Structure formats: structure tokens, C-alpha cells
Length: 370
Image (cartoon, rainbow, N blue to C red; front, side, top):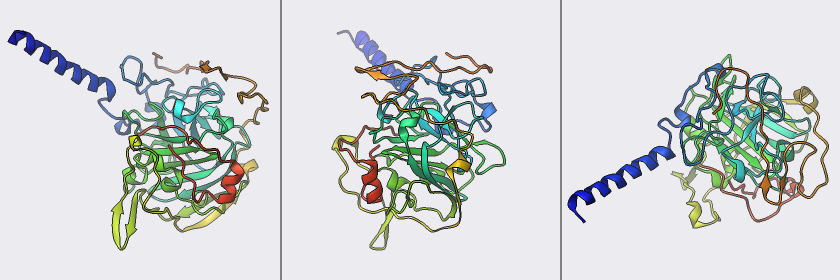
């Protein structure tokens, strides 16, 4: 081959590598994109016009009264209080987190956010721990009411993601926890599955938001990332709802052994299941707890739809999976301006554990795989 021809091939190959990298990662990761108020958000953070490997954002970030229904594709979420928070959940009925992590939509306990509304009776118990550095809510949930499969062991959703676009892709989080009005929280993480959930948001002006809300320990689960009485040592029962002030937890992955502070990093998924973790998570002191009832907290939520006894676990309306074929809900698009165009979840465990067994065991030895 002539030298000039070889040089041309090398140049083309090098250009291809650069293009591949450009198509995979955004110029600015989601975690570094700032839209302080909800009204500052664009229609989509990652529209279809940008050809990323995982595809475009499936939902939208401009959400209002025209998008507020049980088919909404809103991907702007809120965490304001024990009675007013949202969870990321699948957009189609009877889905797993592993199959939909990039497409999750916001399900909120209260109307007014332009999202889907979590039906009454879905949140079975919850504890909100507040600190100046982060807020963390953990609890029990009937996950089928937000379109998850009953037996789904779930995983982690966060503002990082394997391609730095978040899971869900383009998902935004706002909160009044650290500000007088709803303000963007860039570092957040959610674990959900096996009838449990944890949502943690970190104060943009607090200490170590990248530590308390880190996205690198998705495979060791909720107990290590969100240690609370729900997830460590048991003692939590359905029907309990409380808000407590709290000391800061130890940053996930940091532990002390023989007087030495060490850091744990989870092994690559290619190395197989995690069987040994060198430390146990522990809870921290809480105080000034106030208890509530679900009827007071979620009075504005619609009643849960009646369940059907089909093998697929489908609900009376919407989308069902049949014979491996998924029909997606179209969802409503906002009437406002805008044009439509982490580490991710790694799958489910291969064992089955009933909700009753988890409660009886107090989740002490259970590891939620993400």
C-alpha cells in the first residue's frame, strides 16, 4: 500500500475514534448542567438531534397542567417533604428497572408538578431524615402501582449514568429542602425494588455532595447507600411515617478497620456477583421525630386502580407486556414552549424473596443489586 494511502486510512480511523467518543458522552455531563428554577429547563436536555449511543431522551422536562396525567412522560422530579416527593418509575406497565432505567418518568405524591400521581396506598411507610448536607427518604412501597413488576429487585437511578446523561436520561431534580423555592439539585440518587425505596438529594451548598450522593456503589444496594432503620437492622413496620432530624451518615464506601479509615470500591460486574463486602453499614442518631398518617400525607392522591388477576400482572388501562412485545404509552406533551423532537442498573437477582420474609428479616442481610 502506498504511504499516502496508508496515511489516509490512519487519519480516517483516528477520526472515527473521535466521533465514537463524541457520540457516547455529552460535552457537558448532566450533573454539571444547571437550570436553577424549573422554568429554566429546556424541553429536553438531550434531544433526538444529538446521536448518542443509548439514543435520545424519551420524555421531556417542561411539565405543567397539560402534562399532568397517568400517561405523562415528564422527567422533571421533586423532593420537597414527606408528603411531597417523586420517585422515578417505569413509563410502561409491568416493567423492570433494568429494562427501563434510561426512560423512567416522575411519579409524584402530589398534583401540581405536571407528572404522574402515585396512587393512594402505594407508599406503605416512610422515614425522612433531614440534615444540612442532604435529605434522605426511605420506605416501603407497592411498586406495582408505579408500573414495576411485583418481583423486580430493581436497582439505582441517579444523575450520573453510564454515559453521564443520567438514569433516566435527562432527568432533573428540584427541591425546596435547601432553598425557599424549588431549586435544582444536581446530585441525587434513588434505589427502588423489592418493595423498598430510597431517595437522597444533596445540598448544592453543602459539604461533599459528590460523596453523600455518589453513584459508584450501585451493586451493593440500598442498605449501604441509604442506611436507616428501614434498611439496617430492621424495626420498621408498614404504616409508619415520620420526619426526623439526623446526623450525617458516613459517606457510602468509607469505613474504619483497626483504627484506619479505608475506602471500598465495588468490583466490576464482569467479575461476577459481589459475595463479600468488608464492612457493615450503620445508622446514625436521629432526633425531633414527628409522626404522620398516610391519610393526612397523601390525601390528594387518586385511589389505586383495581388490580387484575392476569398472569402478566397488567392493570385495567395502559400498556401491558405480552409475549415479549411492549407497546409504549405515548404520553402527553406539554402545551408550553419547546419542540419535541451511573452507573446503571445491572439486572435482577435470580432468587425470590417475599415481602413478608424481608420484613421479618429486617433487611439486615439483604443486598439489593443494582
